[in-house]
Length: 88
Ligand SMILES: [Zn+2]
Image (cartoon, rainbow, N blue to C red; front, side, top):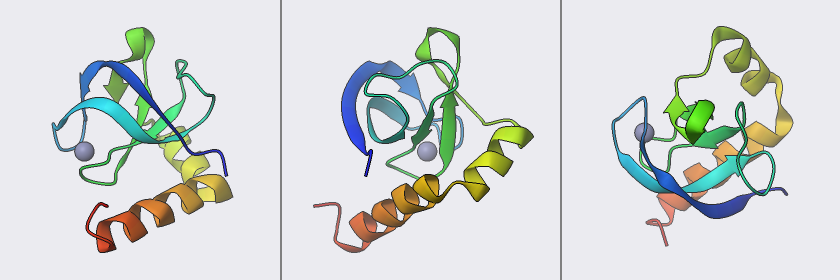
C-alpha cells in the first residue's frame, strides 16, 4: 500500500479550507509532484497538487480517475477507518 506521510508547505484544503501542513493520505510518489493527489485529513475529500504544491479541486477527469482507481479507494477506506478509530 503506497500511503505516505510527509511535510509540505502550508496549504489550505480547497474543499473545507483546513490549513494543512501535513498531507497524511497521499496517492502518488514519496514526495508530491504537480498532479499528485492528496486526501484531506479533515474532510476526506480529494485534492490535487498544482504548481508550487498548493492544493486545488481535482478536475472532472481527475475525479473520474479517482473513482476508477483501486488504490484511491483503499486510501479513502483507510481514512474512514481512521475516523472511526478516533483519529488515533
Ligand atoms: Zn478538507
